[in-house]
Image (cartoon, rainbow, N blue to C red; front, side, top):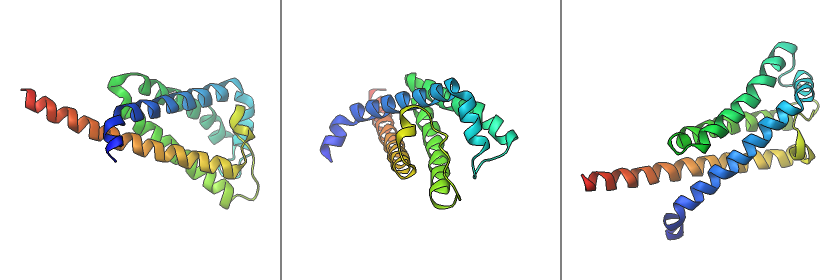
Length: 154
């Protein structure tokens, strides 16, 4: 695990970049295909209903883009990773519910991600969930190292 310590900063930067790309792509796609996203949410066996679908069709892409923006700025990246973790927990929970509970499987994804099966989508979500956890753990460890060196320099 010495290579992790050696390349911690690069690993964390790659995780930030992956989430920035994923969340920006997903958020913009949901806005560009807004009516399709809303219809899929309204017809979802988990969410369903016009009121919740209307709210989610705006809140989900806004949250994705807001978290992506947090990840861009170095001062807010850790908060952004926590936001990404929260979003991935929600998306993974929704996907688990669709795969294992729902009587039918609508697709509310847009763009390239819509080409995945629900099972493949679940695997992708779990991978990004694990990346968020890894990014947070490595960021906190790096922050402790910086704090320790800051203390030494005083």
